[in-house]
Image (cartoon, rainbow, N blue to C red; front, side, top):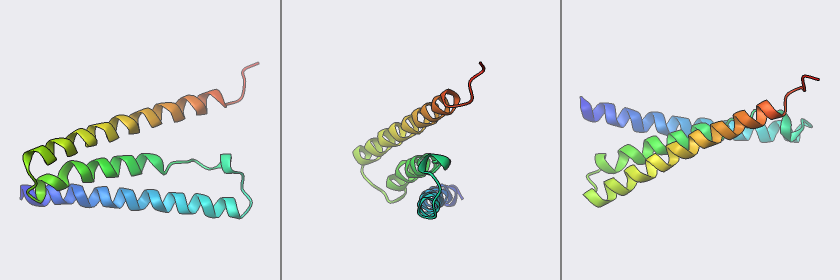
Amino acid sequence: MLKFMDWSVVVVGCLLVLLSFGFRWWERAKIRKGASPRQGMRFYSIPLLIGLGMIVGKTPHLVGAPFAVVMTADSLSVVLTVTAALVLVVQATRRAGSGPSAE
């Protein structure tokens, strides 16, 4: 049962990566139709980073990789998680800074 749950985490990670590529494709299609590039949400980077972190964090252990590979993958997973958090913070500060002024 536990192995099934681990593989389901990998599948959800793959779905998040595909979702981020879908968002990116949709945004590019809107830009081609005449929308301004700054008008979109630019939401594709968060699911991409989280999905890659989920995939990298679970797959080496599931395929029976050596301990050093599993530890390297876990470290990379943490780096991807921290990067996703930083991207969220930067997007939030930019969104707050570009809002209408209170004057």
